[in-house]
Image (tube, rainbow, N blue to C red; front, side, top):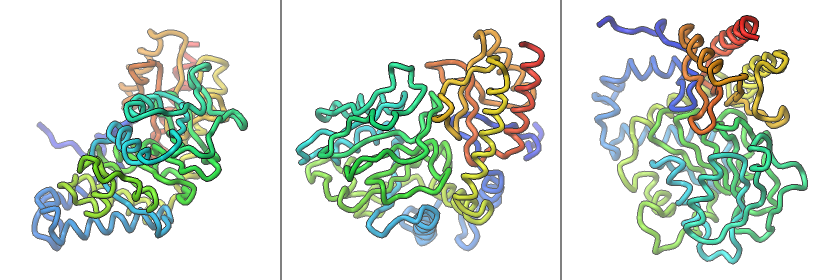
Length: 369
């Protein structure tokens, strides 16, 4: 079987695990057998060895630099993805608080978070977009937030519905807890406005297997002492992400992605500009198609990461997906729960890939309208 090369790569629009920067993959390939200076592969290193501790420290430092994380926040790396955080957050933050948390429901992932939070106690739904099928975010004045809530929870970007917060909801001092998994590092983030941020790496920051969590010191202190070991944030902070064997290779790859953002891209402000330009290419095609492509999200709340739309029939959508695949445009099927088309254009998706998709969309519409 012939060896594949970079020129054989398709444009991967999958929502996750998603495309990684080519320079990152090439560096990982070069270093896979033997990380320079350490005599072995990263996958063979003890998590307590000098080699891995250097990687861990570098990853944390790069995150702190890129996001300008204040000193009163801790960075930890966990496993279990969002599904585990849906439980860990209420387990750690609700205990000892007099008022239930507020949840802002903007799509599927914030709904999943509520299902788990309800197992731990009462919650308050501050807003729910169900009435319009989660095609928009709350308007000013629609949020019913409790100023004494234990915390306020939101999902910054709903991958399935394709809606995204452009700025942080105002929680009037209540700690804002945010699932940033699908748009982490896509723009500068005012971390001081948050109490806790978490992000599964596999969409925008690395491979599947590691979750980055940034938590303010006062929220770490809330973790109950009688909480099961792995579920307690205090243990992970105290042990510097080494409470158990961490996903070492995934953390190494995240470090390479962060280095790429810093050195190759030039930081998060430049990444944000690039992302806005990429998304606009696709939304311009949708808006100019005279209804052939029907975007799900209202224009003001459209995601820069996940462009979701429908065609007039499922058969036509299947044709679209098949013809796109034939052209090397892969992973465009919408989530199984809603169908349609979804183009995930995360940080690592090159502009050339988005331009190729936009060109195909124009051509497909001209032939099938």
